[in-house]
Image (cartoon, rainbow, N blue to C red; front, side, top):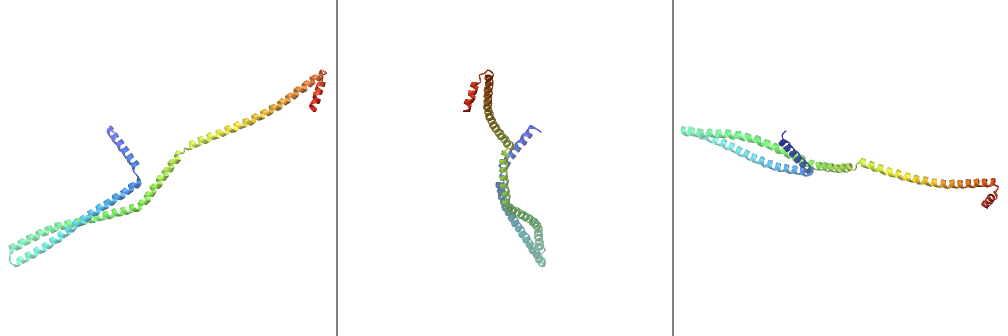
Length: 232
């Protein structure tokens, strides 16, 4: 494929795509109906014109039939009058009228067939026009529903499930972090209280050990005094 063929195909493709995007089905349907109305008007005018021509041909047929009968009658009168030359002329005119009559009859028959076909085509066009009118409202309603569904689909597709899931996971991680900090705070408070009790236990152990040392060294009164003082 040459470069010019490829460029031509590319241009046609882009133009067709632009046309497809610009088409409004509702407006296109109304335009189709208007075109059909125009075609029906034109077709009716053509049929009327063809019927008029048929009538003219029919008149020509009648006229030449009348002429043929008249020249035949004149030829007969000339023969009766013994005027052979005049009879011959009348017969020549009769033959001319007969030739014209044959032509007009053929044209009239052809015209009749043509008019009948045009009438059938006009009737078919009118039937299609009526069917299109009856379908217009339903087609436009279908188009509007399709457009609404398309808008809903676009809105749904804009809400990515992955984005929602990732956001939910982030919130869950944040909650777990808050739970962990709360648990750590509680644990630290428990540890602080335990440490205070351990310090108390540590002080008692020191005092007991000190009292034991003083008892061994014979200096237990202060300890006893301390005990008495602690009981007050």
